[in-house]
Image 1 (tube, rainbow, N blue to C red):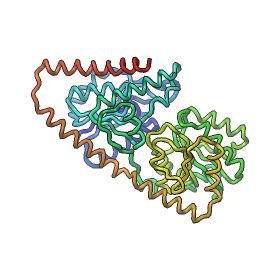
Image 2 (tube, rainbow, N blue to C red; image 1 turned 120 degrees about the horizontal axis):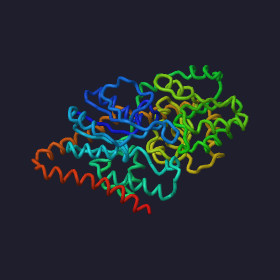
Image 3 (cartoon, helix red, strand yellow; image 1 turned 180 degrees about the vertical axis):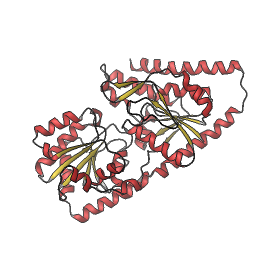
Image 4 (cartoon, helix red, strand yellow; image 1 turned 30 degrees about the horizontal axis):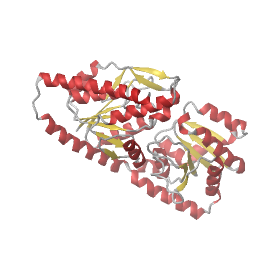
Length: 418
């Protein structure tokens, strides 16, 4: 099957959507499918990328490492004429999302859309952010979902939320899979030695993009409270982003700078080693659609302390593979970390075993098989639909209808929010 992936973020950018697209793409290719990825240009992108079409983009949008695609893609259609895709899978409802709709309509293909992100949680990146803007992005993504043939939700929580918001398109729950073998093979000693952390020290870990929407002020406060009570404990933070500097300054003010370690971006074996260096994984984000890094930590046998939130509650079972806190209470979060610290070795081992057992539900093989089943179902319907002959007038009418639907979605989103 020829599969077209269209995304506003892709490697080398580090983030949940880019990771998801790359993971599904790699596995689909390993199964013999031809996958072409359409993504923005990045300064650090390799020159030779087979089956990746890079579109012109504004680099370092809002001062960060995010690129914004310039919406001029006339040359793209010529590339796709040669590729002859069977299905279009888009991962964003804006920018590249509009192009995905046009491509699907032009080639009369099924359109799949994955609701990776709760966009209302990210409006702080826009200077004019407000409640009205949050309403706009919610309405925009809901309208876009209803233009697709199938919507993928990474978790049951997100599927329920978008249904309540008015998504009428069929929804399939398919999380991003994880490579169990990759994460099972790791050694925490390498990272501990890198940061001079003693073998018997106790490590709280966190991994993710360091950005305001990840609720890192709360996490820092909770972890600091725990570290101040336990002199043998350290905090390892894997990832990078705009919140790293304020986090570092916060822990310095607390006098904890010698026990807080920013490990930067990690991938491959170094990523697995980082997880294996942790005794417990701390996670406080409430903006996730899937607790991907939570599942990765569990694949390494690391139990989790997290806030109860969409995407996370599908992975963490309170008292079984970690602790799930219903309230955003830094003292309670610190106490949960302390419970792991003081638990008997048999109890810690049991939590680790349950964590690995949970991770097996999110294997790449299972998730990709479910996605392929969706593709094949839609592909069969698409073939049946394309058997009809269309006149030039009907094709022109369909083109005008597509542009009207895109324009209507934007104007309706604006109107509803105002």
